[in-house]
Image (cartoon, rainbow, N blue to C red; front, side, top):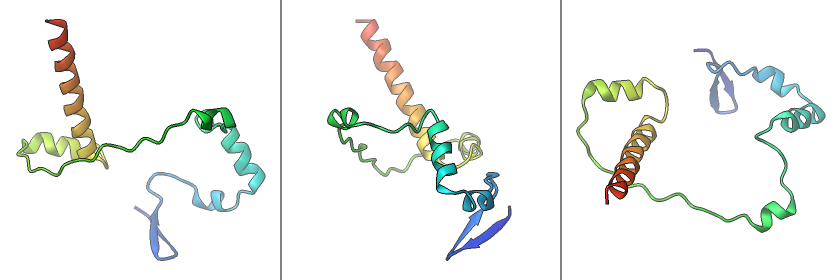
Length: 104
């Protein structure tokens, strides 16, 4: 992994980002790139009239015993393994809730 010191923080280039090209982009090129991204379109006043601030639910810290093979697999998927485990457990919970509602 190549590291480059930027300010007091070492930035890694492992993800393939061309930081030098980004530093050399002008405002017009940055704007054109943002406008070309379908997920980053500008919003209008109508959007903000109906927007609602939503805070994520607080998470609870717990200690849980997990199989080492399973934990290694989740960790091997990259950053955010705890979030992924939480998502899998939530999906299971929701599937069980749906299953139980259908069987009533």
